[in-house]
Length: 272
Image (cartoon, rainbow, N blue to C red; front, side, top):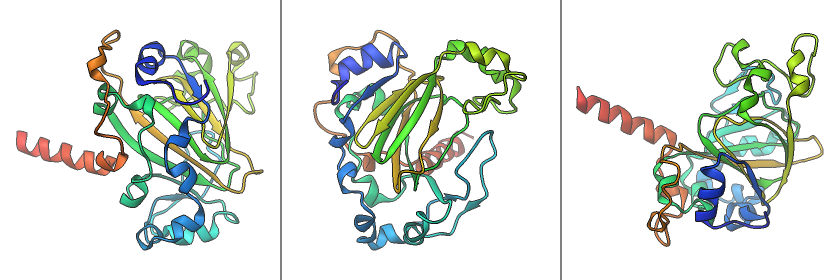
């Protein structure tokens, strides 16, 4: 689909029907897509001093993340990521950066916003490979710079991805880029849909859809944002009054995952 669809269509035809969709160019509604150059990041002292979690390997075939660097400033990362295998995967918990991420028009629905999880940054120089996995929430993947290849599989084929043979829920032991059919013979019958996304594109990945995501070494700069929410509202409940015309439009007005966790601790402590 070219551009962003309206929130009613997105909710009725894709979220409720558990159906992926690619919205070409939709991400240009967010200021981050055009603003986020390295020079822009370096122009703000509070962004330069930000310390996101930095991963030191770019290829994940199982749940073997790490080692991690917890004390690298964003300024140091920006000076080294093109030469070193560094990968920022972190909540966008920097207030200034969150101001640049507005909700695309397809998301401006109270049911989505009430269930919003968080906003995450994925930043590298390319050459990344994720494990084969699914998330337990709906997700929008927005490309800010560079390109990604997303390999999607409907969850009805979970048995063929041997999900019961992994030590963590939501992960498959199969490396879809190099499948050993002598070990995993059922994979040969699994339909995989390849989706290629580039700067300004937004891909909707429904909850429990399997996906494996790659970026390529031809990129010198690869930045994506993921926005997740929990679809707990009833299917078919799509009254027009549920959609926002004004008001909440920026992620800076939503607590970060750390903030949400703190609020849950407060609620828990008050209950005992």
